[in-house]
Length: 295
Image (tube, rainbow, N blue to C red; front, top):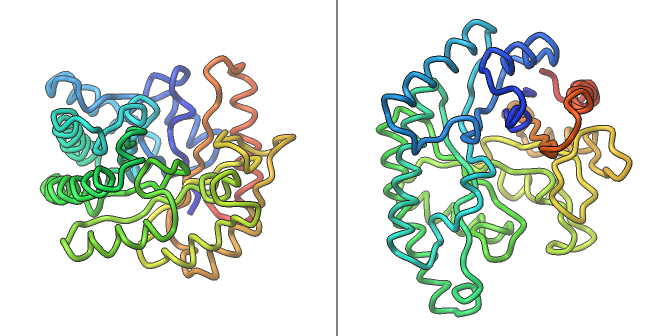
């Protein structure tokens, strides 16, 4: 099932009815993933509730399902749950708690995103690195409880192609999954296709199928975007430097037994890109992908 992350709407389609109409009427999609770049869980509860109500009304009016709510650019930047400062880590837990409850208010079934970034110092020191991992498990234990209280099904964890972030490779995902299962944390992975083929970290033979096969039982959602395999540009289709094969990806998804999980286009236009060109790219990307992943 093809849906779309609302990151394309940031700094453009700011009124909920504007992005809702565009997604339903122009793109022909019925499922969205909300981004916290459009509304921040930190905002005061009363003000946030009014904005959440507007979002839900727009989704209902245009017959859209809000599948999940996800970390955007703003809250990917801080070190989050891997910050070297314990006060900053506690604040990150508070943010995730508020995000979980906001996701529930939106009618979503999951909340998610990348978990954080270690400092250069911590990542280079074995003792510090192991302590950050133990701290992370404890934090996810707490957040998992909040996810349940918010009425959500699970926490979505996005692996990233940065060696100072957790998880950043298949082996680390499998270890994290085992540890979270042991603690009873409700979670699933949100695998980003562009991340999986980042050659500077994973080498020239990197492919999304290796991730899907290894993590199939714990993968709950896919982020789909185009890439040159040398960065994380989140392009659409077509792109003159894009090399991500959607047909091959769909086949690998089927082989892994994941053909029925949500696949969210995650196309991040640059803020300075022309609005008409952004619109055209989104339209052509949906047209490119739907023959292989039905809406």
